Image (tube, rainbow, N blue to C red):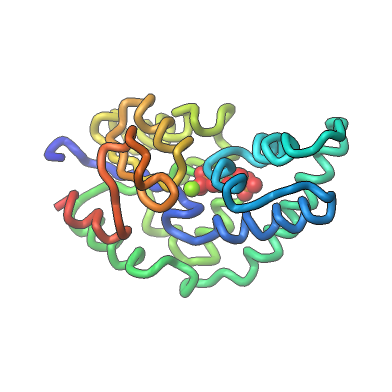
Length: 213
Ligand code: B16
Ligand code: MG
C-alpha cells in the first residue's frame, strides 16, 4: 500500500445507507405495477444507473413498456427517493465513517467520491460530508455507469493520480469490476464483501484505517 495516495469512495451503501432508500423507492414502484421485486433483485441494482436499474426490474415483467413509460416510472421512483433524501442529516452517516475519513485526511490521503448517482451532491450536502472530498465524480459527469471504470478514472484524474495510486472502496460487485478493470486497488464491503475480484474485504468501514496507515 506504500504507493497509495488517494482513496475514491462509492457513496450509496458505503458512506451512507441510501441503498435502503433506493430499495424502498423501487419496491413501492414495483408493487404498484405488480412486478416481483425483492432484496436479491435489488442487490443487482447496486452501482447501476437509474435507467439500467429499471431494465433489470422489468426483466420480471411480460409487458413491454415504451421509452416514455420507462422514463415516467424512473421519474416516479426518483421523486419518491428524493423525498426520502430530505430526511438525511449528519446523523445518517454510517457509524465511524466521518471520524475515519478525517483520520485518513490527517494521514495525508486525498479523498474523492466515485458514484453512479445523479443525487450524490444533494446527499453529501444533507449529510455534511461534502467538504471532506477534493472531488465528486458522479452520475452527472459520466457516459458509462459501473461496471465501466469511467467514474473512477475521472475521479483519479481530478486528483492528479494514476489508478495504481488509488484505492476504491465499494459495496457493489459492478463497482468492484469497474475498479479492478480500471487498474485500481479495490476494498469491498457489504454486498460485495465476498466478491473474489476485490483485493481486500472490509468487515467494517473503519477496517480501512488498518490497511491505509
Ligand atoms: P440515482 P453508488 C448508485 O450509487 C446506486 O448504488 C444505484 O442503486 C443507483 O441506481 C445509482 O446510484 C443511480 O442513482 O438514481 O440517484 O441517479 O452506489 O454508485 O454511489
Ligand atoms: Mg454503492
